[in-house]
Length: 398
Image (cartoon, rainbow, N blue to C red; front, side, top):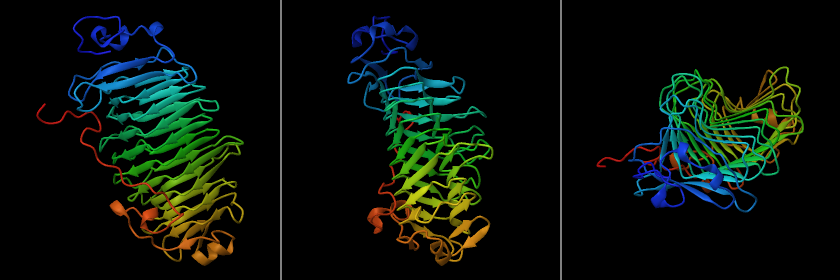
């Protein structure tokens, strides 16, 4: 489809393109088809929501793909801070969505709900916009359940520097089998009113969060967590591995947390491996998480903080191991009301293979990257580029 087409078309070719999302005849689309959305950062944006009305089958997804008209960025869907979503995939399976820029939506740039198999959201760019309050998330994924219902991969998300809206990068709730990987999430929003997290999991069963770059690039001291994982369902596991999480200014809160709210009776847990987490009053916060497994991470607290805070239902010896922890030497951890030194921490059977050291800084001041010399600990991700056309801004001279 192409909004610049000269006349209404059947959608069967570039020369006969549909001109608006409302014109799409979804009965013509299905397994193995590709719907191209034509445009670039300098074209007028599509000012309507795309509600996907068809799906594919195993091995032959329906592909919805942005097609740049001139090579200057991707087609843009603009919610004008009044439409809820840019793209909605609801109870559709085997759909691939890629190559679009979405901005200024009042709930989320992309939502996927009720998928059971084969949905892939990849290589899109999302900017939250500023609706003033409420939500302005990047990707909102809910109630997707199956062996491989949804993968969210290699998307990029950013925010304005000031809005009271909740500008979470990724919101995940009531999912099972979903994978979030290789996304770049940069929260520039300095306002903590909306509790803007890089990644938030709520009432999930089992999801995988791996190899993402999550950065709180703002001055918020509270609430804007790198990752907040809450109320995991009984028998479920949130796997959090290979991520870089930076929250250097979050002096009054946790950079990453696994938290079971009072009154929640679920018995799920978290497994954290090979992450690099920097900042926060606590780099890692666990509450009511006795089954947690925390291995081979780099956990560096912010000034005056603790590398690890554990409250209620202490995990058993051996559940923490191979980690590099850094905070004040006498205050490596805070455990059930008491402050522990490194020796006190190890005396509990934690981090027998661990290291207590201030790691060298890699590119951009990131501590503990593998290429910085701590092989086997932390994540090996390099800082992402700050691209000029990341969020559909028309370059000068066009």
